[in-house]
Each structure stands twice: as C-alpha cells, then as structure tokens.
Image (cartoon, rainbow over the protein chains, first blue to last red):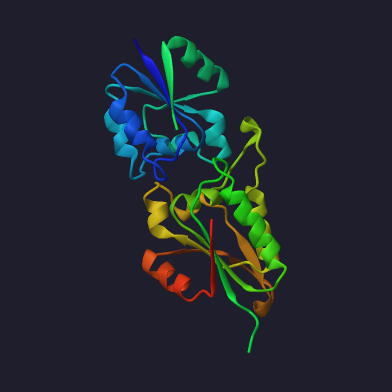
Length: 102
Length: 135
C-alpha cells in the first residue's frame, strides 16, 4: 500500500528529507512543500540524495511554494513533477496514507 | 571618540518557512535610523532570502523581497553573501536580486550592494564587527 510523504523543511537546515528518503518504502511518493521545495533544486549538494531515490520513489513539488521562493522550474532536478494545490489533494486521495515529516 | 559602531546582521534562514528573515529585515530597517555602520551577511539558507523573482500570490503570504531594494536608500549597502553557501545550493549571484545603492562620495553613481565573498573573507569581516545580531 503506497504512502505519501510530505517534507516541509529545507534539506540544508534539517535532515528531514534524508530521513524521509531513508525510511520511505519503495512505491511511495514524496511531496516537497514549504521550505522543503529547496530540496528540488538541481546542482545542490543534497540533489544526489533525491536523484538516487527516484528509482523507488516518485517525487513531486508544490508549485506555489516554488514560485514564492523565486525558484523557476528549469532549476529542478529532472524527474520531479510540479503540482498545484489540487494536485496535492489528488496525491492524498491516490495514496492510502500520508506521513507529514516535520 | 566616535559613537558609530559596526553592526553586522547575520541571516541564516530561508524566507517564508519561518519568521526570522522578515524579522531581521525589519530590525535592520529600524536600526538604520540610528546612523550606525551596518553590514548584512547572508550565509547557509539565508542566501535564499535574496533570490529574484519571488512571487507569493499562490501561498497567501506577503512578498517582502522587494523591501531589500530599499536598503540602499537607508545607507545599508554592505551586503555580503557567502560564496560557499550559494554553491552548495546550486545558486549563483545571477539568481539573486541585483541590489544597488547610489554612492554619495562618487557623484551618486549606482553601485552593487551585494558582494559575494568566501568563508575566509566573511570570517575577517565578522571579526571586525562591534555588534553581531544573528537571525
């Protein structure tokens, strides 16, 4: 049964994203929201952690949080899908459970 | 003896996720009224405060990034951004707002406020401060 994980902390401020990726079961999804969206930028020191996890997990990022922080979509790691608030709701309904990493 | 002290504000948090960035900016603007020698440092996630193109309409939060452009008018024109912090986040100075000030000692020529400096350089600048406020 697939789980949706939301991560709202910057990967260079807390280790939330790394813990989530370490513990999330294959087949699940990770949605980066709020300061978590900084984890979606390619070329960053922690970008490999996300890229390497993509074989087992689907990655999404919340568009309005990207825009607020001035991150354009061409700066994102390849393979991360951008969703809006409706897409967030869809992800919640498509998964059996949601885990909010804080 | 001069009453002017060297103030340094150290910014280490991303905007919006916490209130630190906005609070720091407000303290800097309030402090500017006291005509001290002010410098700002942006390190770690603090460099995210200066990214250009911030648009917060979608999250229902005030976009305070245009306010950084006002710093030059308050004689706050020493803005140091740590190079290592930018690089480890996949950013360059081109991703930041082009903050400017007018130099009254140089016929009001428009100059860049942002200086990208190495850790070693920033260490020296911090060491020469009289008062350091950390956000």
